[in-house]
Image 1 (cartoon, helix red, strand yellow):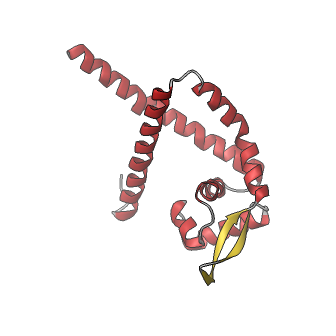
Image 2: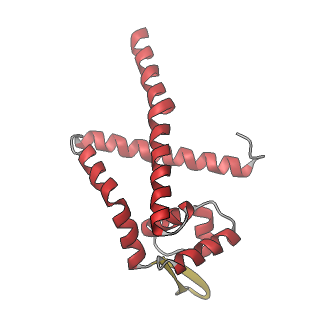
Image 3: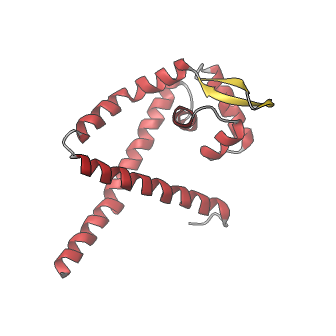
Length: 161
């Protein structure tokens, strides 16, 4: 039993201490390269991902999702409008508000920028059984929730780790 516990700790250490952080760093690096190619910032790319995944949003909602102040979000939206990636549209539920929606061009540009990674990832996952893919999805959902909780914790307290 001790060997099984040691192996589990070794695997957890490898995942938590090396594999996940190394992958996260590579994702941040890729997002930076993509942002440079699109002529926007890393946070602007995050905004495009959010809009692509969740649809149009108010500037305030976008600010919260990408962890910006409302002023910084306004500048981000201006950059993305200038780059042709998003547009402002009237909110059909409240004509006093505006929504930000991705343009088809913006979605295509982001899609094209990540097409190589998507293809490679599809190939990487090709050898996984359906049950293994379900396990990966379960882990990624849990990791996203935990990461969001840590973001909230840092924002809620004195900001110290």
